Length: 314
Image (tube, rainbow, N blue to C red; front, side, top):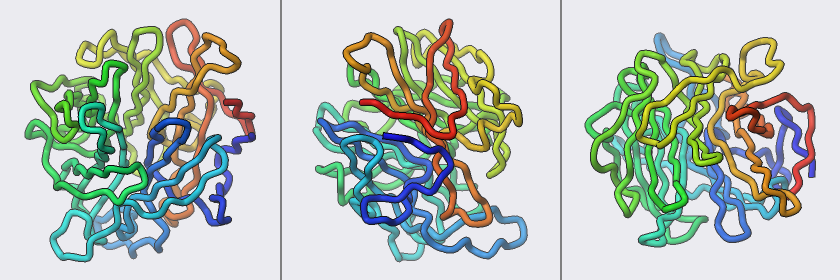
């Protein structure tokens, strides 16, 4: 099974996959890939507005092998009621889904915003099935703080965390979720204060927590940074650019969205991870491509090298 980063990836029906800014949920023997459906023309760029498309909704794809993907449809569709968070005129980005151990529900969090990015909220939706439909619960600012690019992380004990850009994208905030995964609770911590980091992706290795982030350059790619901490709510240390031989300093012309842990190969104890990233095409966002690359751990730091094609063994 070969992965070809940056190429057009089609689903099992032969249509290009639309799952941008997404994540993968592993449930039993099935992988579920959630992401933004951008299969609609770019909105004409008006004075002072960013490249964008009308909201279509959040797509889900399922797979047994991470290569062949069945389209399960739009599991959180746009809502054509003026003023609704999911109205086509609004912003719905970076959906992340966890299964809640307490309730058994599938819980989706996402970045909810206005076209000028001043709303800066998270939205939450729930479903009894990984393939939806998801029922939208509403939006809010976590701990009363702005939230733009975001991700979720679930620890082995079931504790889950929201990690999001805040303070006008100058700082990353981290806050634990409630047991039902529907809200944040308690205090939050601030990381990389004044560092202007976004697109966080979190994973765990050898009892330490790692995060890969992007700089804030809009749709243009920039050098990734990796970070490490002894606990999610502890102090985070920046440990450099994880991308090896990235001569252009652009995260291989992409921006991370999620790090997927893989089962060990052939009963090996070696940990394996995939960085999922998007190669944005701002002039035609629906034609943005996927860049998935293997992550290795060397001397306590993640390392990512470019591959025109690489074999995925499960």
